[in-house]
Length: 524
Image (cartoon, rainbow, N blue to C red; front, side):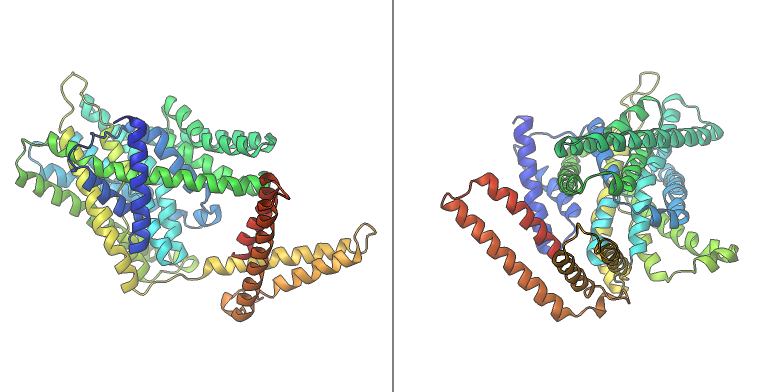
């Protein structure tokens, strides 16, 4: 089977499993991994190998860039302390804890290899976690912290992995050198990411064609990642910073049509990447098991159980003290940010699902050490990584919705209130502008009056209390129904004109685009 046919076949699987996941109300990453796992044992299918270079260059940068682009910079800064404790403190703590347990549970495993394993399984994958939390409507701060954690933890883990791998290959390790290397790698990646983000914004402002501008944004994560890696700094941090910068500047620098089209293109790209990645994770199992055929099954099971339990329990042991102890020690911190209920913290502690970054990092381990001998315990590290991914992604992923519902957590409505505020202020600004320009001779009185009535009618949908519950639901439903039926009538007239040859398809599509935008707006 050719590569092109294989990709098409996998895309069919991704689409089918994603649709099934939506129908049976299961997070799609979980079903995709299980689907890939089932496909791996179908006789006659070709062997599919997930190249780590493809993951680190074509898969990981766009995922992180897109997540950073849609991250709220205000919320990220407001939650910088918990995000830092998770993405740096917890990642390093997990690396050490897993290394200690693996060294004890696996006979003959050296310290460098144990730390390599710890670094590989330390970063959670936010794709599956946020797919669950956003769908179930947990408090916005939990989603913000999880998304912020995912933007930084990959860089922390990969830098730690770089240091541990060098120690495994050379046999030398210096803690102070490792700390300095981490700081330089992170700072260098941030600088390059900021420069690339500025360059993309500068270019997009001067590109008139929408397709070209969107293509430039698609190249942005690669443009940030590659030079950073070539210079020996963090390409992950570079892609994240570039995404944060572009997301911050897009509203003021990109035309509206570019943003609308770009969001649709990026949604499709990220869906394809995530779908393929999670299916490919499942397809890797046969190769992993084949490489460990000579090891006793009992030894592998004990090692896998020990490492999986450690990975899960360490997060719980870190999250609760990291939430409450600083507030006990620093009274001013508790005054500014009171201690939260234990319920959202429990969800945060159970949301440590692992995914593509861990598997790609394990696959990227060198085949040989510095003296030409095989890299120590490489196959075992890959197997244990796969077990951690399955245990967390499937085990925790399937129980996380149950935990959220059991604890009675729900959406706190903060985003809806802020949306109501934003829409209300925008309408009031439009009315104020009509007041200023209404008396000018170039503004027709009838047009100004019609626009004013339209704005005032829209304002009725967004109460001054900012509480969406205060909106007259019956009035809104009637308005949406009437507006939808009017748009359907306009669209039917267009199609009738096209069908009898009065207009061509190009004219239809131009008017249809405006109707589609109006329909989308009416459904907001």
